[in-house]
Length: 110
Image 1: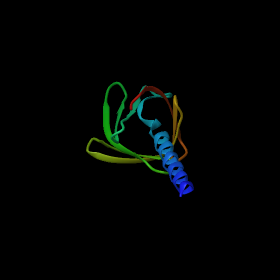
Image 2: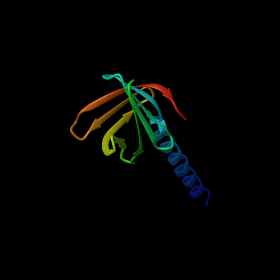
Image 3: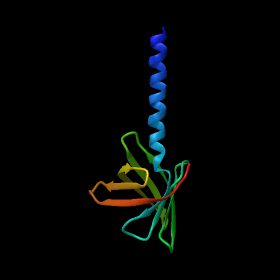
Image 4: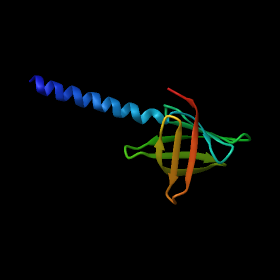
């Protein structure tokens, strides 16, 4: 019985660590190639600002590490999907065509 409890506790702890590691995408990110910022909030909302305009939308991160974004611009809804790689200070988004966008963290949001 003690062994089963230890295994269950290990599974719960591992699940907790995995769920915490997925949240490291929250924050404000500066695009390394363009004068724009991307903000990803814990509640699934996003904001893209380029200095002259702001676009609002929502996003979801899948179990497979995909970032799915939905924004509305001029009344038209746009859906984008990226493969996401995130470290403490950097984020890389790769679209379906293989185009890569790199970001540097400006601010962490918890």
